[in-house]
Amino acid sequence: EPEVTQTPSHQVTQMGQEVILRCVPISNHLYFYWYRQILGQKVEFLVSFYNNEISEKSEIFDDQFSVERPDGSNFTLKIRSTKLEDSAMYFCASSPWTSGGYEQYFGPGTRLTVT
Amino acid sequence: QKEVEQDPGPLSVPEGAIVSLNCTYSNSAFQYFMWYRQYSRKGPELLMYTYSSGNKEDGRFTAQVDKSSKYISLFIRDSQPSDSATYLCAMMGGTSYGKLTFGQGTILTVHP
Image (cartoon, rainbow over all chains, first blue to last red; front, side, top):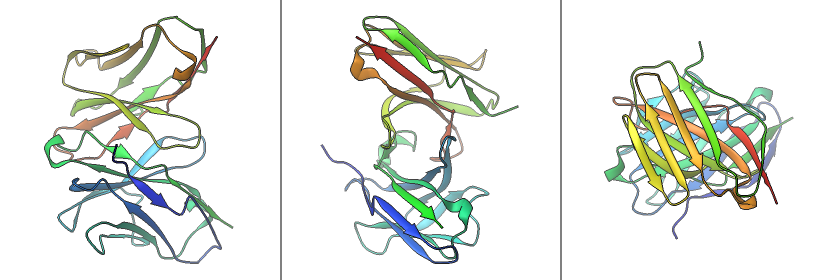
């Protein structure tokens, strides 16, 4: 069964460094998303992406964040200058064109630790 | 008032019990209602989705939506130890394409 994959599984970085989190969505899906989950808190929406453009973003997704689909298979989240409060699990998700966005399939997540 | 509220539990039941999980919400714009299961340190796994009000059944799982009360439920029949996980409700508005708003999650343990 096709699934969303994410790399790395765990990333440790120092405050102020740039990180890139990578995702490979399910191959025939057209909508892509990033969410984060701070330990013990809710899963929070960051951004949705379709047709090489951001469709919607949350207040969390400020100028320090960017997303890109550099080729036909990868979807990345970049954090330019990490802060301690960026420490969280970051989940990538994708959904098929037919679903209207509610049928989202999540990857296993990348645990980001900022020291 | 929080957009989506979910009792975090924890909820502990014996194997074979019927489990009832619930969420309330305040945003009338929500049209799509989903239930996800999340095992420890894993990504959320989509269990069921429902559009608007009504019931939907899938095997041992039944989802109910009551939009008039802004209340959704997930029932698990004949619960199994493998059902032990955190259950997340999630919702999406009709005009918000793909932005899911999650509840806190309910931790469920089914003991043999």
